[in-house]
View 1: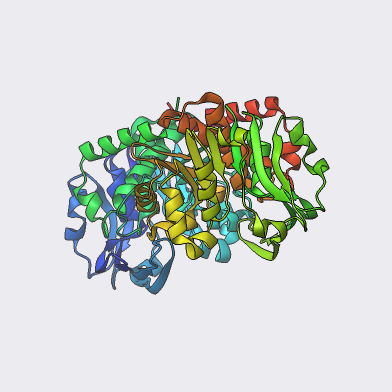
View 2: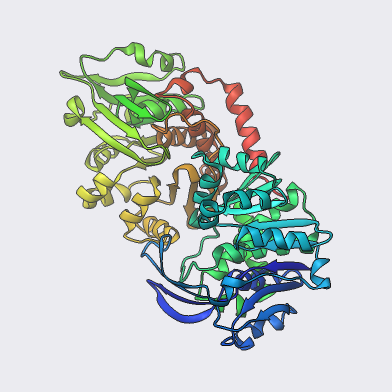
Amino acid sequence: MSILVVGSVAFDSVKTPHGAVSEAIGGSATYFSAAASFFAPVRLVAVVGQDFSMDALAFLRHRSVDFSGLEVADGQTFRWAGEYEPNMNDRRTLDTQLNVFASFRPMLSDVHREMEFVFLANIDPELQSEVLNQVTRPRLVICDTMDFWITGKYAALLSTLARVDVLIINDGEARQLAQEFNLVRAARRILEFGPRAVVVKRGEHGATLVTNDSYFAVPAYPVVSVTDPTGAGDSFAGGFVGYLAKTQETNDAGLKRAMIHGSVMASFNVEDFSVRRLATLTHGEIDQRLHAFMEMLRFE
Amino acid sequence: MSILVVGSVAFDSVKTPHGAVSEAIGGSATYFSAAASFFAPVRLVAVVGQDFSMDALAFLRHRSVDFSGLEVADGQTFRWAGEYEPNMNDRRTLDTQLNVFASFRPMLSDVHREMEFVFLANIDPELQSEVLNQVTRPRLVICDTMDFWITGKYAALLSTLARVDVLIINDGEARQLAQEFNLVRAARRILEFGPRAVVVKRGEHGATLVTNDSYFAVPAYPVVSVTDPTGAGDSFAGGFVGYLAKTQETNDAGLKRAMIHGSVMASFNVEDFSVRRLATLTHGEIDQRLHAFMEMLRFE
C-alpha cells in the first residue's frame, strides 16, 4: 500500500569528526523516502527551488518514488548547515535558509488525497493539519515534530496530534511536549493527546514504543562506524512506516516489528553522509541485517 | 552457588525531587546484596565504623546473607551525600567522608577464599586485585569501576581487568576507559583488556551486553515513579550476578537472561529511597515483573 510523505527536500552542509559534505541532498522527505521505498511505493510532497536538479533524487525514481507532488517554486531550495561534536550525539546548527520552504503550502492532488498511509514529517503543525484536511480516507497517520514547534505552536501541535495515530519524537522533545521528566509518564501523557502509539527516539540508545497495551524497546543496531547521524530519525520513520504499509499489520505486534525495521534502516543511513548509503543499499543487505538484529534481540 | 561481594557499606544522605533521606543505609555491597540475596546466598566483605548498628542490615540476615566478613573498625562509617537534578539522571556529590573505608584492606577468610562467584564492587582496583589474589578457585569474576579509578589508577585497573570475566560499567565510563566515543567500539576495546563480557549501563535507557559473539540490550523496565536512582547500578549487578550464581549458566544465553534479571532488580530499587523497596520486596513481586518484562521484550 502506498505512502504519502509531506516534508522537506533540502541541501545539507554537514561536518562530523569523520569528514564533511557541502550542499548534499537531504531533508526529512528525502531520507524518509529513501528508506521507505524499499518496502512500499512512496508519493512525495515537498518544495524545491529553481536551483534544484532532479539528478539528486534519480536513485529514488528507480525505486518508483512518485515526484508528481514535488513543487518547483521561484527561489532557492531550503539549505541547512550543521556540525556534530566528537560524541556524534550533539550537533550545532550553523545556518538555516528556509528559502522556498518558508512559503510551502502542501496542495494534494486527487491521487495524493486517497493515500491511506500518511507520514507528516517535521513541518509546521498547521501545515500538518492542512494535509490531514485534504486526505480523504487515512488509515494510519504518523507524524514527527520538533522542539521549535512545541515551543512556538503548542496549541496547533495539539490539534494535529488529536488526529494522528503514531507520533515519532525524540526523548528530549517528548519530555518537553508532555511537560514531564519521566519518559514513561511523558509517553503516556502524549497518548492522552490523541495518538494510539508513541515512538520515543533515544539516539544511540535506540527507540521505545509505547501504546496503551505495549511497551517495547529496540537498541540502535550496533554500528561500528557512525559517519553522519543526519537523517537517522527520518530513515527510522521510513523503515517503520514502510514496513507497516507493506504488511498492513498495524496492531501492536506489527508496530513492534516496524520498530526493528526502523532501527535497521537508521543504522544503514548513519554509515555515510547524506543518502549515500541508502542510495546504494540492496534488499539483500537489509534482509541480512534484519535477520542479524532479530537474532541479537531474541532470548530464551 | 554462593557469591562473594567486596565493596562498601555506607550511610547516604540523598535528596531528589521526590524527597530526601539522611544517613540511610547504602553502599555498593549493601545494594548488591539486597538484590542478589533473592537468587543465591551472599557473603559480604566490607568495613563499617563504631557508629554502625547491624539493625540496618537486619533484613539481609533474614535472607541468609553472611556478615562474617563485615569488619568493624575504629572510626566512623563511610558517608556520602548527594542531590539529584529534576531529570533524575544527573547528580551532584555534596559530601564524601571515606572514614574507615579509607584504610579498608579486604582480608578473606578460608570460606570466602573458596567462593566461585565473585563480585568486586566499585573500589580501588588495587584492592580488587588483592581480593583476586586471595580467592582460590573463582569461576566467574564480575567487577564494577568508576571514572575516579579510570583517571587515577588506569594501570592498576587494566591489571584487574585482565583477571575479570565480566565488567559492568556505565556508558560514559566505558568511553573513558576505552578512549573511544563509539560505544560499540568502546565495548569491543574493553573485551581486549581481558573480560569476555562487558555490560554497559545506560541509566534510564537500559543496559547493553557485549561479548565476542553477542550483542544484547535491555531497556530499563518502565518505572512510572522513580524516587531515588541511588544504587541502581549495584542492584542491577545484584540481579545479574545473583541469577548467574543461581543457574550457573554463564554462557551467552545465560548472560542475556541475567541482563533481564538485573534490569528488573534495578527497577524495584529506584522506586524508593535507600534499600527500602528491596527490603520489603517479595519473590512473587519479582517473578511477576520478570514475566511482564519478558513479555514486553518478545516479538514475533
